[in-house]
Image (cartoon, rainbow, N blue to C red):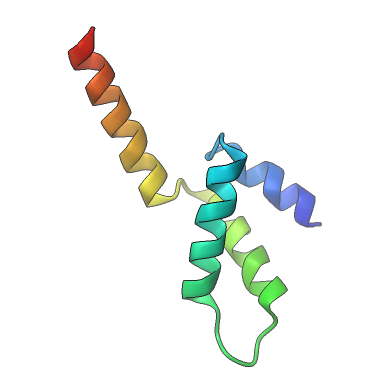
Length: 71
């Protein structure tokens, strides 16, 4: 079910709004003609469940670096 995929993806992306934005961007880039959009969205969420999206990982490192300098 898609809710299982969403909750699995939330383990790596803790902000639901950011998850929606990343998933929509990835779905647009990975979608192939003559396939269902729902299947592509499910595939994207499944990938997010297994790995940390690159933008989120880079932003987390940047936040840690900024917080480390400010302390």
